[in-house]
Length: 310
Image (cartoon, rainbow, N blue to C red; front, top):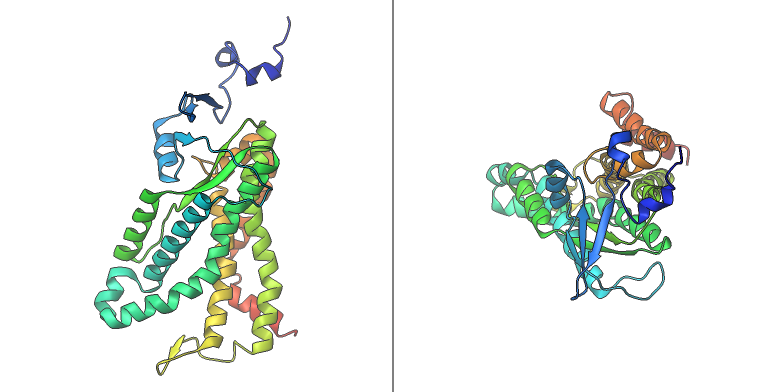
């Protein structure tokens, strides 16, 4: 009996696929373009949970086709605007989290609460901003490498929800947006695009360890109190410790979260491409996080040990 050429799947669905197996783990996206240039994405077989999560993570069902020229590092004015919106809202939400949200407002009073937010926002921007922004740029660069249109788009609903949650509960769970990708790629290429974001976080974590140790060791930053505001003055040594601690923790947590194998998260696409790569990458993030929460190590002790060698 003859076998269907797998390349035919790029043109039409295999009518016998459902009879042969349970089908692909991730449904292919079919695209049609209307006369006004709008690209319509039809995610066939998508379940309601996937649709809800796609909305939450900013995946749009209709994207205006605005292909542009330029190299891998080209950013359109619209994309830059969306990156600034998302980064600003994310930073404000982190400030609310640091100030403990509404409970902090009631406990400290409006003046002290506002001061805590203003102090926290620039530190959070430096510590966690790169983990978010460079993660998305990683997706974008690899997608453009494979000839796709790829631009970041902020999700207004995700931004509002995240800021509201941080303000009310002092807890952050936010979907600032995502890189929108249009183009025909293989499963392998789609896996490469997906894993690029978490690998950026892994690189930032690895690079951050020696940079943090050198910075904190040369400034003797650990030889100070942990209070950032002392007698009305900023304790810049404590600020350095805060920034580097959050830098390392944020990249581990963001990398692990995005490698979870469900919904529109990166892990689902990576697992669909190559399960060995998926389990390797998720283990790289999961092992240090689990051992950290179990008390076997912590970021500050690690940095104190390494900085003592300088």
